[in-house]
Image 1 (tube, rainbow, N blue to C red):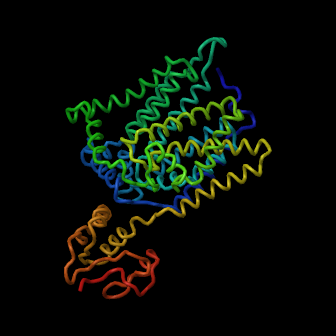
Image 2: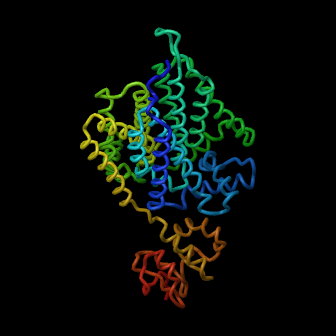
Image 3: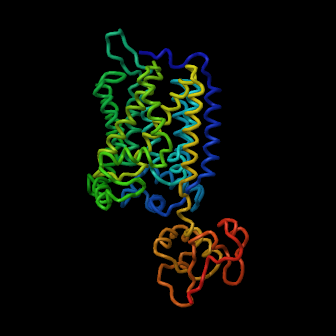
Length: 480
């Protein structure tokens, strides 16, 4: 069933190149402006996993962070090139994000057109979660990359499938492509266990026989089993336990408090209501739930798509719906936090961009412009409102320790989160969480009016500028 309307003659590569280049550059500028950076949390565990690969090849992770090979191994490779630095820590995530922009831009362009691709990428690169997660060393972006890549390849295979007659089941043109879909899905599962939601979505398409016969979907399963099976064999050979990853993951999950607010930022009422409340009210989603979801429903209810565009919308919407339902329904396994709904929000960004393009092309330009402006403005306002100063105290302690040979006393949380940065600077012995006694020095990071007056004179202007402080207050005091 060759897709003859997927690439009209007036669609050229220059249009795609402009969309991707401009989108990528704007993304990097926004990333610089809304940078989150080092958190001294999961990113430190991934860094430890990278250290393991560099010092004990091949390395078997001891926890579920260090077993996430698709982030840990690229981070180790980046360290070979850039050493112990922020560049090495964040480069893999940024590259995955750029790859995600490229795939979704290309997919939208070839299926719907340049206008839809531009609108979709504009919503994606301003999405609060996409920008903030791209500026951290975590697995949300890599997981989304592999899942989206798998569905992109699946769409490519369906569009090139062929039939001998109208009554025959379509036959995929590339069995190797189906194997690649499974391999990419398997890599997503090695990235984070929530990628099983994508497997569930593939299962729904398998039951429906979407695109080609059900038998061919089994080849996708072979590809996924190949990746997961090879890892199982390797971990078994190193640990003696066939289910090493499962045991490690279960132990980690046992320590999670399911009802503790870890970022939902809503009043918890009932497990059936809470996910909807978070999607509506949490600033991480901007106005996407309020405007993007209705736009997506409009796409399907008005039957404005056909051919390649319809197929892309079905794949994205099906993935988003199954992922959201499972993430919301597994309340006893997953805490309610926005990042577990990140991939569905990416899908809605793309579908919303397609809907805006269709509204514009249908002559409803004012409506399309207003809705587009509202969505982008909501994203930017949400980004501006987000707290990106988690590590003010950590950076301050690290900076002070690198400039002066004093023993600084701080709280345990700040000391723990600063450990990696202090190790890089070789000044870990200058900071301690031990209780301060008379004559000891304690950094104060409680407010910006507390500026940069250090014992013995003012701190350098660069430090005062960095912390946006005045020149006479103190960020360091001695216990009397």
